[in-house]
Image (cartoon, rainbow, N blue to C red; front, top):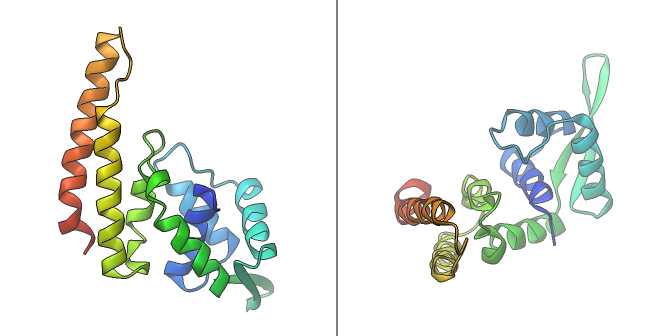
Length: 163
């Protein structure tokens, strides 16, 4: 199973066709999310781990006087990526929003799988909204409920956005 950071890196490489560790680090560095780290100390080892697991294939490419490694996703990487992309339980998580991360890459799976995934996310999100949270803390309950309402409205609008 991939972590969200691993899944996002694989998805970015799959979307591009090939990418260097530097290119992935730049994507993460530009993210507005506090979750992503674009530091070389985080991304370069991550990419090497994915390659060591057989999920990425490095190839040398010359660029001026420097040689660089381009990484492409392998067949095993595509399987792992699809499992991560369609992991509705994880994507419906209510902390860091892994759903938003997946949405930009759902074009990598079939429309039928995408539709099924979003249906699962909606169902899981609705079940979560029914559970009590922050009992005895009226302010936190109000914040949580407003967040749940906003998320439900957002989920209802996704069909038009990701097709």
